[in-house]
Image (cartoon, rainbow, N blue to C red; front, side, top):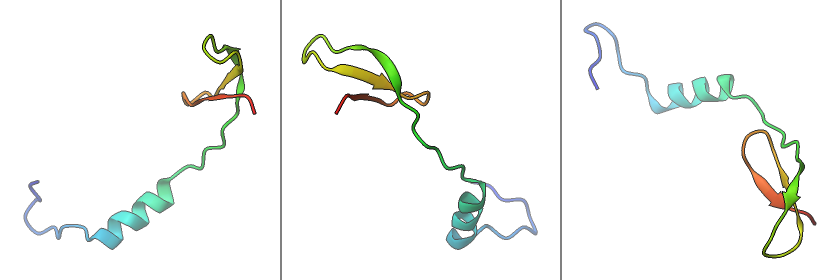
Length: 55
């Protein structure tokens, strides 16, 4: 990675702080998406793509 002259590379602590400050917390909001043909349980999916069977 090339850094412009006169600019110090960011330290690991700087990068971690920047990630923490820009991170957005995601809460899964599951909704019914169909039946699982193998187990017969109901499948629920979140908008982010996570799919889980019913409990």
